[in-house]
Length: 322
Image (cartoon, helix red, strand yellow):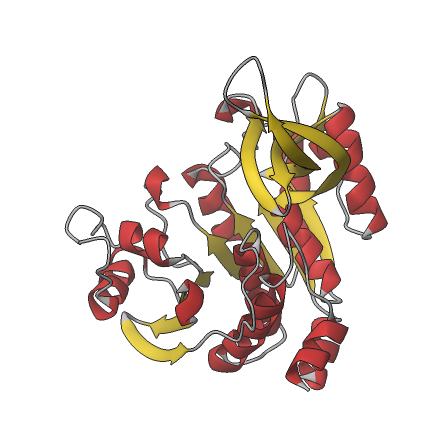
């Protein structure tokens, strides 16, 4: 594990996708409002962290590697907070991706006694976050040429469409660069030949187009892997199974099932970001898939034991394994 972490420290990853700011409103509620049957929350503190593709980039840096980030945010107060967090983590986020008149995507979660009471989303229509401007694309393609791997983080907010994904894959193929995708199946992008995809159970069922054929408790793993391979041809498929760990598949066949390493599950927010970040780093460092999956499983096992969107450090991984 120590040797792998040393190799990872030499890797540079570009993250492309929907950039967000996660806002946590922490407080307590001891009475019901006289205006409506809802709790009155007395706010104790506000906390701001990276969200979406920005959190994937933060996971990359937290694990000791280098990260650059491509995705639009606004020149507004939320964008300023987000850029400050990214700058403190030494994430390369070019000015070309900050736009006047654009609202930075914010997810605000009201948390009372470590329980999420509600979530408030602020965002514009998806077309506002599309990476269609010529200057934006030129900078994006420049960053791809500098990277050892590219992670496409699709949260269905507008940054990723088939055109931009196709161009990323074509440019990465020229240099043999690994492309990983965290897909949103409901958007039905007909992508093919991605190096790695990391759906969760429900996303895998949608990618296999079986969502209308299965009972809620059904998960025919062999059929799902076979169908995903036939439709999308990923080089590596890793399905995250929550409490059941990870399923590894290649060419439509199951290679391995790895049980979860989580000691305690406190909050799964951002766990998918940690999985794709750690898997991509390990694969880009030359690690075989099974070993990379054990590394990612360890990282995710640590993150779900923390509250809110979180990251993991090399020191925590080494201590966890010890």
